[in-house]
Length: 278
Image 1 (cartoon, rainbow, N blue to C red):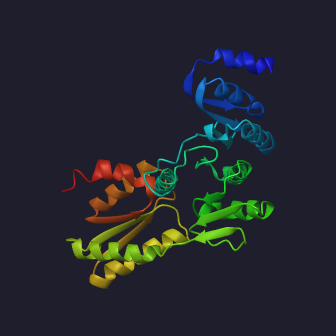
Image 2: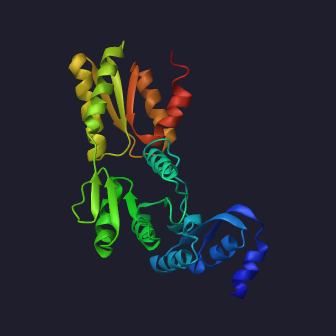
Image 3: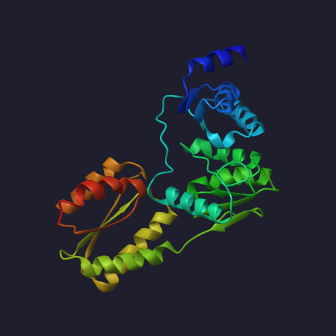
């Protein structure tokens, strides 16, 4: 521990520290316990030391003040909670529920664990179990495989998954009729377009986004059978630059209404493209 204390002494008080090769999270525990950091991101290239770090943080009641990521330290580490879409909406709903029930963010309350890549899903679900949360939500269809791996090992824990059906006794499946709301958006687009050309931009192809697309196209053609619907996919939910490029191309092709199911990629489209197009 002498080495950990020496390193901690070199770090000035700050909001966030990223520790690549986190040595079972001992540095994080030191910094957080001594209030030298508000948040520590622990990065490990192997699962075993990452799991040990999570157990150590849980024992010290510090897990809620960390991110624990399986990463080589070279890949870009970006938060996706503030995606102005699905993740942010889910968190804000949970946050509102927590406050309404007199709970605080953190242990014995409500919290979130961010997954920077798909490899983090199992780790974060397991970490939430070890933190003894009563209900654990898997936010989106991409966590299906990870939940199927984790849930059977923790039969006393309760899980829920959004946008997928997982038939396990301790998992609740939450699904939506996405095509119905998209149908109404299609009706609005079909009635509004002046060029008879409308567009749909999807994020990544999946059953969920397919329903958005199908509902929108059906809605357009229900009120305007002659309208042409151009469909494009960005193969991403976070590449805002790609959203701008795709939307600009659509506007240049006389498409005057665009509907999206693509989360963060349309932010630059809204800011950069729409103001000049009146």
